[in-house]
Length: 193
Length: 193
DNA sequence: GTCTATATGAAGATAGAC
DNA sequence: GTCTATCTTCATATAGAC
Image 1 (cartoon, chains in turn brown, cyan, yellow, green):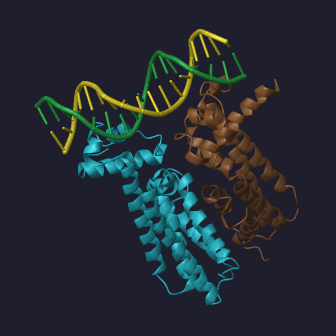
Image 2: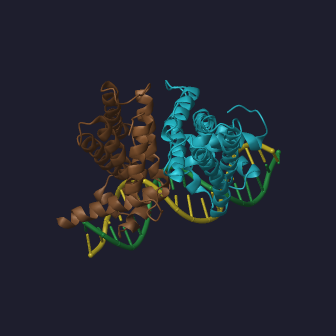
Image 3: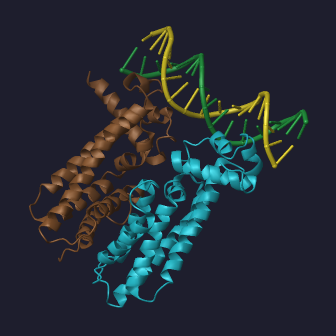
Protein backbone atom coordinates (compact mmCIF):
# COMPACT_ATOMS: atom_id res chain seq x y z
CA UNK A 1 0.00 0.00 0.00
CA UNK A 2 2.92 2.33 0.68
CA UNK A 3 4.09 1.50 -2.81
CA UNK A 4 0.96 2.93 -4.37
CA UNK A 5 1.58 6.28 -2.82
CA UNK A 6 5.20 6.17 -3.84
CA UNK A 7 4.43 5.44 -7.47
CA UNK A 8 1.76 8.11 -7.60
CA UNK A 9 4.14 10.61 -6.12
CA UNK A 10 7.08 9.60 -8.29
CA UNK A 11 4.91 10.25 -11.33
CA UNK A 12 3.89 13.67 -10.04
CA UNK A 13 7.49 14.61 -9.40
CA UNK A 14 8.62 13.33 -12.78
CA UNK A 15 5.81 15.27 -14.44
CA UNK A 16 6.77 18.43 -12.57
CA UNK A 17 10.38 18.18 -13.69
CA UNK A 18 9.44 17.64 -17.32
CA UNK A 19 6.74 20.31 -17.35
CA UNK A 20 9.19 22.81 -15.87
CA UNK A 21 12.00 21.94 -18.26
CA UNK A 22 10.13 21.56 -21.51
CA UNK A 23 6.62 22.83 -20.82
CA UNK A 24 3.38 20.90 -20.57
CA UNK A 25 2.74 20.45 -24.29
CA UNK A 26 6.29 19.43 -25.12
CA UNK A 27 6.23 16.79 -22.40
CA UNK A 28 4.99 13.35 -23.37
CA UNK A 29 3.42 10.81 -21.08
CA UNK A 30 6.36 8.61 -22.04
CA UNK A 31 8.75 11.25 -20.67
CA UNK A 32 6.84 11.23 -17.42
CA UNK A 33 6.79 7.46 -17.17
CA UNK A 34 10.49 7.22 -17.94
CA UNK A 35 11.26 9.88 -15.34
CA UNK A 36 9.44 7.81 -12.75
CA UNK A 37 11.13 4.61 -13.91
CA UNK A 38 7.89 3.08 -15.14
CA UNK A 39 6.22 2.01 -18.34
CA UNK A 40 3.98 4.43 -20.27
CA UNK A 41 0.90 2.49 -19.19
CA UNK A 42 1.68 2.94 -15.50
CA UNK A 43 0.82 6.63 -15.74
CA UNK A 44 -2.83 5.79 -16.29
CA UNK A 45 -3.00 3.36 -13.39
CA UNK A 46 -2.37 6.25 -11.02
CA UNK A 47 -3.69 9.29 -12.88
CA UNK A 48 -6.58 9.89 -15.23
CA UNK A 49 -4.68 12.04 -17.71
CA UNK A 50 -1.67 14.22 -18.33
CA UNK A 51 -3.82 17.24 -17.53
CA UNK A 52 -4.72 15.79 -14.13
CA UNK A 53 -1.03 15.59 -13.31
CA UNK A 54 -0.68 19.23 -14.26
CA UNK A 55 -3.64 20.16 -12.09
CA UNK A 56 -2.28 18.33 -9.05
CA UNK A 57 1.04 20.10 -9.42
CA UNK A 58 -0.55 23.48 -10.02
CA UNK A 59 -2.95 23.15 -7.11
CA UNK A 60 -0.29 22.08 -4.62
CA UNK A 61 2.00 24.83 -5.87
CA UNK A 62 -0.65 27.53 -5.56
CA UNK A 63 -1.65 26.35 -2.10
CA UNK A 64 1.98 26.46 -1.06
CA UNK A 65 2.54 29.92 -2.50
CA UNK A 66 -0.63 31.26 -0.90
CA UNK A 67 0.41 29.82 2.45
CA UNK A 68 3.84 31.43 2.14
CA UNK A 69 2.35 34.84 1.40
CA UNK A 70 -0.30 34.59 4.11
CA UNK A 71 2.28 33.44 6.64
CA UNK A 72 4.58 36.30 5.71
CA UNK A 73 1.77 38.84 6.15
CA UNK A 74 1.18 37.59 9.69
CA UNK A 75 4.78 38.09 10.77
CA UNK A 76 4.52 41.71 11.75
CA UNK A 77 2.08 44.51 12.53
CA UNK A 78 4.45 47.09 11.14
CA UNK A 79 3.39 48.00 7.58
CA UNK A 80 6.93 48.20 6.22
CA UNK A 81 8.08 44.96 7.83
CA UNK A 82 4.92 43.24 6.65
CA UNK A 83 5.20 44.32 3.02
CA UNK A 84 8.92 43.63 2.83
CA UNK A 85 8.41 40.17 4.30
CA UNK A 86 5.61 39.31 1.85
CA UNK A 87 7.65 40.30 -1.18
CA UNK A 88 10.80 38.72 0.26
CA UNK A 89 9.05 35.42 0.96
CA UNK A 90 7.15 35.32 -2.32
CA UNK A 91 10.30 36.08 -4.30
CA UNK A 92 12.38 33.55 -2.40
CA UNK A 93 9.68 30.94 -2.94
CA UNK A 94 9.83 31.49 -6.72
CA UNK A 95 13.61 31.16 -6.69
CA UNK A 96 13.82 28.13 -4.41
CA UNK A 97 10.91 26.38 -6.06
CA UNK A 98 11.55 27.67 -9.55
CA UNK A 99 10.75 24.28 -11.02
CA UNK A 100 7.31 24.19 -9.42
CA UNK A 101 6.87 27.92 -9.93
CA UNK A 102 7.46 27.68 -13.65
CA UNK A 103 4.59 25.23 -13.92
CA UNK A 104 2.43 27.25 -11.52
CA UNK A 105 2.91 30.51 -13.41
CA UNK A 106 3.21 29.51 -17.04
CA UNK A 107 1.01 26.47 -17.60
CA UNK A 108 -2.35 27.78 -16.43
CA UNK A 109 -3.54 27.89 -20.02
CA UNK A 110 -3.10 24.14 -20.35
CA UNK A 111 -5.56 23.41 -17.54
CA UNK A 112 -9.17 22.45 -18.23
CA UNK A 113 -11.64 25.32 -17.71
CA UNK A 114 -12.96 23.74 -14.50
CA UNK A 115 -9.48 23.27 -13.09
CA UNK A 116 -8.44 26.73 -14.16
CA UNK A 117 -11.31 28.18 -12.17
CA UNK A 118 -10.16 26.44 -9.01
CA UNK A 119 -6.67 27.81 -9.51
CA UNK A 120 -7.90 31.34 -10.20
CA UNK A 121 -9.35 31.58 -6.69
CA UNK A 122 -5.93 30.94 -5.15
CA UNK A 123 -4.35 33.53 -7.39
CA UNK A 124 -6.87 36.16 -6.36
CA UNK A 125 -6.06 35.32 -2.74
CA UNK A 126 -2.37 35.99 -3.25
CA UNK A 127 -3.04 39.29 -4.99
CA UNK A 128 -5.44 40.30 -2.22
CA UNK A 129 -2.85 39.80 0.51
CA UNK A 130 -0.46 42.09 -1.31
CA UNK A 131 -3.06 44.78 -1.97
CA UNK A 132 -4.12 44.80 1.66
CA UNK A 133 -0.53 45.08 2.84
CA UNK A 134 0.05 48.11 0.63
CA UNK A 135 -3.29 49.67 1.57
CA UNK A 136 -2.49 49.13 5.24
CA UNK A 137 0.70 51.17 4.97
CA UNK A 138 -1.06 53.91 3.02
CA UNK A 139 -3.78 54.13 5.69
CA UNK A 140 -1.17 54.35 8.40
CA UNK A 141 0.47 57.17 6.46
CA UNK A 142 3.85 55.47 6.05
CA UNK A 143 3.50 54.55 2.35
CA UNK A 144 2.86 56.91 -0.52
CA UNK A 145 1.15 55.09 -3.34
CA UNK A 146 -1.27 56.60 -5.86
CA UNK A 147 -2.20 53.27 -7.47
CA UNK A 148 -2.45 50.40 -5.01
CA UNK A 149 -3.67 47.69 -7.41
CA UNK A 150 -1.08 48.70 -10.01
CA UNK A 151 1.75 48.66 -7.50
CA UNK A 152 0.60 45.28 -6.19
CA UNK A 153 0.65 44.02 -9.76
CA UNK A 154 4.20 45.28 -10.19
CA UNK A 155 5.38 43.52 -7.03
CA UNK A 156 3.75 40.27 -8.10
CA UNK A 157 5.48 40.59 -11.46
CA UNK A 158 8.86 41.08 -9.82
CA UNK A 159 8.53 37.81 -7.96
CA UNK A 160 6.72 35.77 -10.59
CA UNK A 161 9.22 36.58 -13.31
CA UNK A 162 11.94 35.04 -11.17
CA UNK A 163 10.56 31.64 -12.15
CA UNK A 164 11.33 32.39 -15.78
CA UNK A 165 15.06 33.04 -15.42
CA UNK A 166 16.27 31.65 -12.08
CA UNK A 167 18.82 28.84 -12.21
CA UNK A 168 20.26 26.93 -9.27
CA UNK A 169 23.78 27.41 -10.61
CA UNK A 170 23.39 31.16 -11.04
CA UNK A 171 25.46 33.60 -9.00
CA UNK A 172 22.53 35.05 -7.06
CA UNK A 173 21.07 33.04 -4.19
CA UNK A 174 17.35 32.74 -3.62
CA UNK A 175 17.72 34.38 -0.21
CA UNK A 176 19.74 37.31 -1.53
CA UNK A 177 17.22 37.87 -4.31
CA UNK A 178 14.39 37.88 -1.79
CA UNK A 179 16.15 40.49 0.32
CA UNK A 180 16.80 42.69 -2.70
CA UNK A 181 13.23 42.56 -3.98
CA UNK A 182 11.80 43.05 -0.50
CA UNK A 183 13.80 46.26 -0.20
CA UNK A 184 12.81 47.37 -3.70
CA UNK A 185 9.16 46.87 -2.75
CA UNK A 186 9.52 49.34 0.13
CA UNK A 187 11.09 51.85 -2.23
CA UNK A 188 8.18 51.37 -4.63
CA UNK A 189 5.75 52.55 -1.95
CA UNK A 190 7.97 55.48 -1.05
CA UNK A 191 8.82 54.19 2.40
CA UNK A 192 11.56 56.16 4.12
CA UNK A 193 14.06 53.52 5.26
CA UNK B 1 -6.49 36.07 -41.28
CA UNK B 2 -6.73 38.75 -43.93
CA UNK B 3 -5.06 38.01 -47.21
CA UNK B 4 -2.80 41.01 -47.21
CA UNK B 5 0.88 40.94 -47.92
CA UNK B 6 2.65 38.01 -49.53
CA UNK B 7 2.12 34.43 -48.50
CA UNK B 8 5.38 34.23 -46.57
CA UNK B 9 4.37 37.12 -44.39
CA UNK B 10 0.81 35.91 -43.89
CA UNK B 11 2.22 32.65 -42.57
CA UNK B 12 4.53 34.46 -40.17
CA UNK B 13 1.66 36.53 -38.81
CA UNK B 14 -0.60 33.51 -38.47
CA UNK B 15 2.16 31.65 -36.65
CA UNK B 16 2.71 34.57 -34.28
CA UNK B 17 -0.96 34.68 -33.34
CA UNK B 18 -1.12 30.95 -32.68
CA UNK B 19 2.18 30.81 -30.81
CA UNK B 20 1.06 33.68 -28.59
CA UNK B 21 -2.37 32.20 -27.88
CA UNK B 22 -1.52 28.56 -27.40
CA UNK B 23 2.25 28.39 -27.23
CA UNK B 24 4.69 26.99 -29.77
CA UNK B 25 4.29 23.32 -28.93
CA UNK B 26 0.50 23.44 -28.76
CA UNK B 27 0.36 25.08 -32.18
CA UNK B 28 0.20 22.80 -35.20
CA UNK B 29 1.36 23.60 -38.69
CA UNK B 30 -2.29 23.09 -39.67
CA UNK B 31 -3.28 25.90 -37.31
CA UNK B 32 -0.75 28.15 -38.97
CA UNK B 33 -1.82 27.23 -42.48
CA UNK B 34 -5.49 27.71 -41.62
CA UNK B 35 -4.71 31.08 -40.04
CA UNK B 36 -3.07 32.17 -43.27
CA UNK B 37 -5.91 30.76 -45.36
CA UNK B 38 -3.73 28.10 -46.94
CA UNK B 39 -3.32 24.36 -47.04
CA UNK B 40 -0.96 22.60 -44.61
CA UNK B 41 1.50 21.95 -47.41
CA UNK B 42 1.83 25.65 -48.26
CA UNK B 43 3.72 26.24 -45.03
CA UNK B 44 6.67 24.27 -46.33
CA UNK B 45 6.77 26.06 -49.67
CA UNK B 46 7.67 29.26 -47.83
CA UNK B 47 9.40 28.09 -44.66
CA UNK B 48 11.69 25.21 -43.84
CA UNK B 49 10.03 24.26 -40.55
CA UNK B 50 7.79 25.36 -37.73
CA UNK B 51 10.90 26.27 -35.76
CA UNK B 52 12.07 28.58 -38.54
CA UNK B 53 8.81 30.49 -38.24
CA UNK B 54 9.41 30.83 -34.52
CA UNK B 55 12.93 32.08 -35.13
CA UNK B 56 11.81 34.73 -37.63
CA UNK B 57 9.22 36.01 -35.16
CA UNK B 58 11.59 35.93 -32.22
CA UNK B 59 14.37 37.70 -34.12
CA UNK B 60 12.14 40.50 -35.44
CA UNK B 61 10.60 40.92 -31.98
CA UNK B 62 13.96 41.13 -30.25
CA UNK B 63 15.30 43.58 -32.81
CA UNK B 64 12.22 45.73 -32.31
CA UNK B 65 12.46 45.62 -28.51
CA UNK B 66 16.17 46.45 -28.59
CA UNK B 67 15.50 49.39 -30.91
CA UNK B 68 12.77 50.66 -28.59
CA UNK B 69 15.05 50.52 -25.57
CA UNK B 70 18.02 52.05 -27.37
CA UNK B 71 15.83 54.80 -28.78
CA UNK B 72 14.40 55.54 -25.35
CA UNK B 73 17.87 55.78 -23.83
CA UNK B 74 18.82 58.42 -26.40
CA UNK B 75 15.89 60.72 -25.56
CA UNK B 76 17.49 62.56 -22.69
CA UNK B 77 20.79 63.31 -21.01
CA UNK B 78 19.11 63.58 -17.63
CA UNK B 79 19.59 60.30 -15.73
CA UNK B 80 16.08 60.25 -14.28
CA UNK B 81 14.34 61.11 -17.54
CA UNK B 82 16.46 58.55 -19.35
CA UNK B 83 15.74 55.70 -16.96
CA UNK B 84 12.05 56.49 -16.71
CA UNK B 85 11.77 56.64 -20.48
CA UNK B 86 13.54 53.30 -20.97
CA UNK B 87 11.29 51.49 -18.51
CA UNK B 88 8.20 53.32 -19.76
CA UNK B 89 8.94 52.44 -23.40
CA UNK B 90 9.93 48.84 -22.68
CA UNK B 91 6.81 48.29 -20.57
CA UNK B 92 4.52 49.92 -23.11
CA UNK B 93 6.07 47.80 -25.85
CA UNK B 94 5.27 44.63 -23.93
CA UNK B 95 1.69 45.75 -23.41
CA UNK B 96 1.05 46.99 -26.94
CA UNK B 97 2.83 44.07 -28.56
CA UNK B 98 1.86 41.51 -25.95
CA UNK B 99 1.19 38.93 -28.67
CA UNK B 100 4.69 39.25 -30.08
CA UNK B 101 6.16 39.74 -26.62
CA UNK B 102 4.69 36.51 -25.34
CA UNK B 103 6.51 34.62 -28.08
CA UNK B 104 9.67 36.68 -27.62
CA UNK B 105 9.83 36.09 -23.86
CA UNK B 106 8.42 32.63 -23.36
CA UNK B 107 9.34 30.52 -26.38
CA UNK B 108 13.11 30.87 -26.37
CA UNK B 109 13.44 27.30 -25.16
CA UNK B 110 11.77 26.04 -28.33
CA UNK B 111 14.47 27.53 -30.57
CA UNK B 112 17.31 25.47 -31.94
CA UNK B 113 20.62 25.98 -30.08
CA UNK B 114 22.06 27.97 -32.99
CA UNK B 115 19.04 30.23 -33.21
CA UNK B 116 18.91 30.62 -29.44
CA UNK B 117 22.47 31.91 -29.49
CA UNK B 118 21.61 34.62 -32.00
CA UNK B 119 18.70 35.70 -29.83
CA UNK B 120 20.76 35.72 -26.64
CA UNK B 121 22.98 38.48 -28.04
CA UNK B 122 19.98 40.79 -28.46
CA UNK B 123 18.83 40.05 -24.94
CA UNK B 124 22.21 40.96 -23.50
CA UNK B 125 22.02 44.22 -25.43
CA UNK B 126 18.71 45.15 -23.82
CA UNK B 127 19.99 44.34 -20.35
CA UNK B 128 23.13 46.36 -20.99
CA UNK B 129 21.20 49.52 -21.89
CA UNK B 130 19.31 49.32 -18.63
CA UNK B 131 22.41 48.68 -16.52
CA UNK B 132 24.20 51.61 -18.07
CA UNK B 133 21.24 53.92 -17.48
CA UNK B 134 21.17 53.00 -13.79
CA UNK B 135 24.95 53.23 -13.46
CA UNK B 136 24.85 56.64 -15.14
CA UNK B 137 22.48 58.00 -12.48
CA UNK B 138 24.53 56.48 -9.67
CA UNK B 139 27.70 58.09 -11.05
CA UNK B 140 25.96 61.44 -11.29
CA UNK B 141 24.92 61.03 -7.67
CA UNK B 142 21.17 61.24 -8.33
CA UNK B 143 20.40 57.54 -7.87
CA UNK B 144 21.08 55.43 -4.80
CA UNK B 145 21.46 51.81 -5.79
CA UNK B 146 23.61 49.22 -4.01
CA UNK B 147 23.07 46.50 -6.63
CA UNK B 148 22.93 47.79 -10.20
CA UNK B 149 22.67 44.45 -12.03
CA UNK B 150 20.05 43.23 -9.57
CA UNK B 151 17.98 46.36 -9.93
CA UNK B 152 18.25 46.20 -13.71
CA UNK B 153 17.02 42.61 -13.51
CA UNK B 154 14.04 43.72 -11.44
CA UNK B 155 13.09 46.44 -13.93
CA UNK B 156 13.33 44.00 -16.82
CA UNK B 157 11.09 41.61 -14.91
CA UNK B 158 8.49 44.31 -14.34
CA UNK B 159 8.17 44.93 -18.05
CA UNK B 160 8.62 41.38 -19.32
CA UNK B 161 5.97 39.95 -17.01
CA UNK B 162 3.43 42.31 -18.62
CA UNK B 163 3.43 40.00 -21.63
CA UNK B 164 2.14 37.19 -19.41
CA UNK B 165 -0.99 38.89 -18.14
CA UNK B 166 -1.80 41.88 -20.37
CA UNK B 167 -5.08 41.75 -22.30
CA UNK B 168 -6.36 44.31 -24.79
CA UNK B 169 -9.75 44.35 -23.09
CA UNK B 170 -8.30 44.91 -19.61
CA UNK B 171 -8.97 48.13 -17.72
CA UNK B 172 -5.41 49.38 -17.78
CA UNK B 173 -4.05 50.92 -20.98
CA UNK B 174 -0.59 50.16 -22.30
CA UNK B 175 0.36 53.83 -21.98
CA UNK B 176 -0.88 54.14 -18.39
CA UNK B 177 1.00 51.00 -17.42
CA UNK B 178 4.17 52.37 -18.98
CA UNK B 179 3.85 55.61 -17.01
CA UNK B 180 3.26 53.72 -13.76
CA UNK B 181 6.23 51.41 -14.21
CA UNK B 182 8.49 54.23 -15.35
CA UNK B 183 7.72 56.08 -12.13
CA UNK B 184 8.20 52.93 -10.06
CA UNK B 185 11.62 52.47 -11.66
CA UNK B 186 12.70 55.90 -10.42
CA UNK B 187 11.51 55.01 -6.94
CA UNK B 188 13.52 51.79 -7.13
CA UNK B 189 16.71 53.78 -7.58
CA UNK B 190 15.82 56.16 -4.78
CA UNK B 191 15.36 59.15 -7.04
CA UNK B 192 13.81 62.14 -5.26
CA UNK B 193 10.98 63.24 -7.52
C1' DG C 1 2.58 28.39 -55.83
C1' DT C 2 -1.21 26.11 -54.57
C1' DC C 3 -3.58 22.17 -53.91
C1' DT C 4 -4.90 16.90 -52.55
C1' DA C 5 -3.07 13.01 -50.79
C1' DT C 6 0.02 10.65 -48.05
C1' DA C 7 4.41 8.95 -45.80
C1' DT C 8 6.17 8.46 -41.37
C1' DG C 9 6.26 8.76 -36.84
C1' DA C 10 4.79 9.90 -32.24
C1' DA C 11 1.27 11.33 -29.30
C1' DG C 12 -2.52 10.14 -25.49
C1' DA C 13 -4.76 6.51 -23.77
C1' DT C 14 -6.35 1.42 -23.24
C1' DA C 15 -6.41 -3.94 -23.19
C1' DG C 16 -5.14 -7.80 -21.18
C1' DA C 17 -1.34 -10.95 -19.64
C1' DC C 18 1.07 -11.97 -15.32
C1' DG D 1 0.30 -2.79 -10.02
C1' DT D 2 3.31 -3.58 -13.45
C1' DC D 3 4.30 -4.84 -17.80
C1' DT D 4 4.08 -5.49 -23.32
C1' DA D 5 1.46 -4.64 -27.06
C1' DT D 6 -1.64 -1.92 -29.35
C1' DC D 7 -5.57 1.26 -30.71
C1' DT D 8 -6.59 5.68 -32.51
C1' DT D 9 -5.59 10.08 -33.52
C1' DC D 10 -2.94 13.63 -34.93
C1' DA D 11 1.56 15.57 -35.65
C1' DT D 12 5.45 17.25 -39.05
C1' DA D 13 6.78 17.09 -43.33
C1' DT D 14 6.83 15.51 -48.37
C1' DA D 15 5.23 13.93 -53.19
C1' DG D 16 3.27 14.99 -57.17
C1' DA D 17 -0.85 16.78 -59.83
C1' DC D 18 -2.46 21.19 -61.78
